[in-house]
Length: 453
Image (cartoon, rainbow, N blue to C red; front, side, top):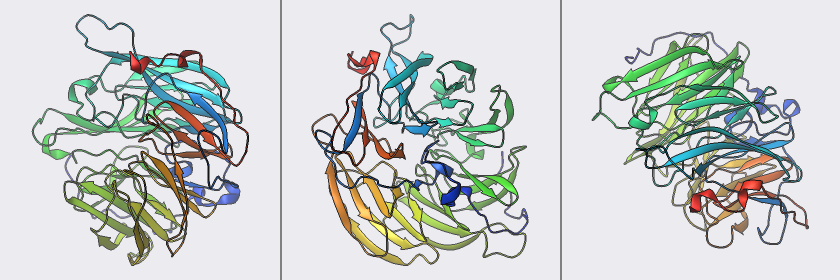
């Protein structure tokens, strides 16, 4: 697929995200970064201070396997994926991992069920990642899970409705493992996997595809290989809901594009200098912002859908190369863009102009989890703790919460649902809320973690 010219024309409109309308939003977190994929919650009474040992933990569940995926919340249930090393592997296979989906009662943490979705040979991955790094997505019919080579829908009762092998060559072509989470649009589930070996292995193919939610059948697929494609992108697509329906936006390394949801056709494309993009884009009102990159080819780019002439693609408002996040997805909330680098340098920008409002170094470790916000607060999770900041034009650190003890660190992004902040650590899933007593629940397979074998 060659890069198209940036001349496609669209009807003029100012996009209105349903995710931005508090009165329309259920108190759920149905995909990576919640409603609309924006990291913003409308929940009330979110926790400020806690201790995972003794204070404001509603429930805590030990995990049998490992994963960097985030929990999601749908229909009063918390869903989480994990990978467990199989006791035995087929002849000629070094390691095999079973990929699981867990379901917990959102209020109590009580296990509802746990389902093995697929068992495959261990693919090459980044040393910071796991074999279950992709966050699922849910609708009223089920939960959609993606593990690089396979995509599946699991019913809310724990039955696998369908399972399709979407990328048979995934393990052979994998370098850092699957990272892009599936998203739902119209009657399809969108999944993507970029090739990961730069320009050195031209046979590697990346793809973006739409699969029917009801059956898993392929609706359309866009593929590229060699120097035709973007190379090395680990973002999750955005589905914007506006007056003309849903729109699919993908921020790749080197350019951002809109795709036609019916055909996969590229509607417009805007270039920028961002390499190996891992952080996902954000959107509010008419602003679309991409911020990330690696290897000194990083940047923040802010686009406006309203600034251009009638029928035009989005217009670049401003760009900046300072304090760009390497891994953490930014947060766009009430006209302010918040970013945090891997090493904890957090910045707040006026989203419409790019003016810097404040910049401070946060405490406690490296910040690879994506930012989330709610109730006028921002939650920035590191591998050692969670900093809680006041949202606004002035820097104000409200609380600093320690994850406590060795083995608790995680790169998973927090989720907000069921009236609490959901934190995944290496060994547990915690529901943190303003409550004095604690509840400890357990899974049948959690007595002996399979990843310790």
